[in-house]
Length: 397
Image (tube, rainbow, N blue to C red):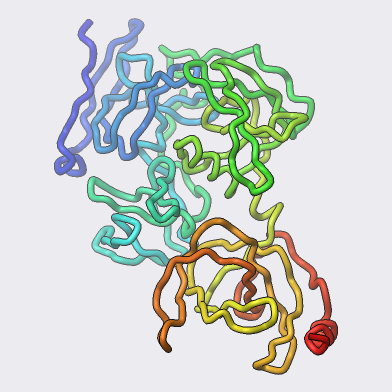
């Protein structure tokens, strides 16, 4: 039997060629197949959900069986004639709601258009493909088109509202010529916050922890097929740190905590026996503000640093809420203290009477609570003093 070949086309022709429908004959059954465009670089997996090491590049055509199948709860397309499956989201994408007005980008600094529009607005929906990409500026972006480079900041998008893949009658299990094994070698969870994860059968993955400064530290390497009992699935900035440390992003990456330890496993390197509730580290463990306008930075004594942070979409962690006496205003104001970080930040710095753009580390920095927006659902802080106490402390100095 002649094997189906993967058809490659030029990027320029990709978006204009209509899908082709062919018939493949496997296990004495005639099954419909179709040719689809890969919109996001995709790894191929076997029928058990283990990586094969094969990669399909973006804007490449592949011939797949038209009826997607589920492997461990996710939809995949089977490559015709091969024991290879690629995630349907890399082909059909998913629909997300836009939560903040957003531009379309081709690079971290260069904008472009999408369907003849240069800006998209809150409340609209858009299709994104695969996981997010981390750009040079450290921010994450989802691909929204192609073959031109068209990306939207992930911060401006909400969770998935619709899966675009059309499911056939056999999508809840596997296709007639495919059987995903029901593995019995995973332990039964003892609670909703506990399950077993198995390291990818073809690749090892690091066991990591975090030092006192929050940096990722590798403890050891977990062997392919090694199993762990885990009791927490966490997403957010710490999971993103691990993704950056490993160099692999999935757009919805998380980390699993190994039960009874402070060691963690990256979600893309393991397969879980059952789903755990995902906890957002930034919302559950930290206090967060946003700069919704250009904002002055202050010192601990209430004097200006002559530095401003412009309006931006970033989440900023804060670790204190307190009253500080502001000499120039002759009154006490409520301030947030920015959590110290080793990252350099884009700011406006006063230089010879004019504000100029600069990139500097921020140390012992305060912002007026009235100048910023507190992110709801993050950990609320209570003032550590009163306005009268701040005034009294200033008088003593």
